[in-house]
Length: 252
Image 1 (cartoon, helix red, strand yellow):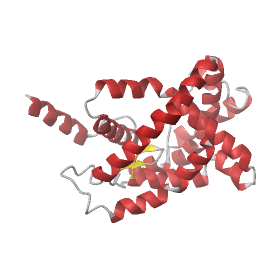
Image 2 (cartoon, one colour; image 1 turned 90 degrees about the vertical axis):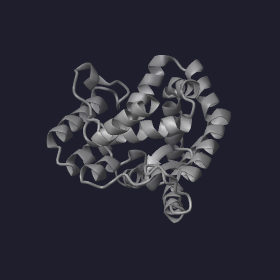
Image 3 (cartoon, rainbow, N blue to C red; image 1 turned 45 degrees about the horizontal axis):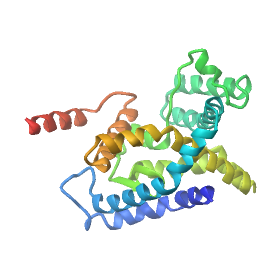
Image 4 (tube, rainbow, N blue to C red; image 1 turned 180 degrees about the horizontal axis):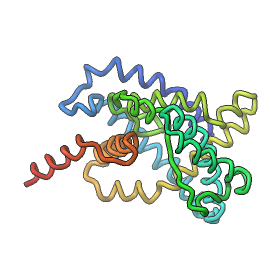
């Protein structure tokens, strides 16, 4: 059931982007970073209700009944698969040293680490990176575009949505299982991947709900700042520093 929901969500990503473009002028607000705010808040509310009714309880049960080493092993397995996307985007950004390191991590973890269930490279202190096509587009100067909340998948932007679609189609090994006719395996892997990610975020989502007067705005700002930082390899862009200073001065 969960796998079907996740698959449906991914197929609706492109449609959501088109809808965002067509409603841009009607939904615009004073905030340039979120011109689709009224639509985004509606999708955010839908995601929040669905998560609290379905995904969060499943994640909580999974965390309760599954020993920590097993959960860690599955998370390592899916992160290792994601290394393929990282290596590909390293190359697209001409980060050849990173590509060599990340490819080495993948080989080590896939062999000595038993298909990635054990992060042997981490034990050896081998540097880890995470790149995707959204970051690659940003690296080459493509702006993030409007902030966008995707059904089930959460925070994104027009650029990152396009990047997600590209990565899913081209470098995601789980997509390959579907392409070769292993639909059941594909759905099982997607469900396990989704539940694992949701379980990792249990504490974070509780903190956001408790600490923020407007969880939607908090998540939006955190997402945009994090993505901008990732594009610049960990640096905080000047525009966000300026925004933070202006907000502090406004409070004073």
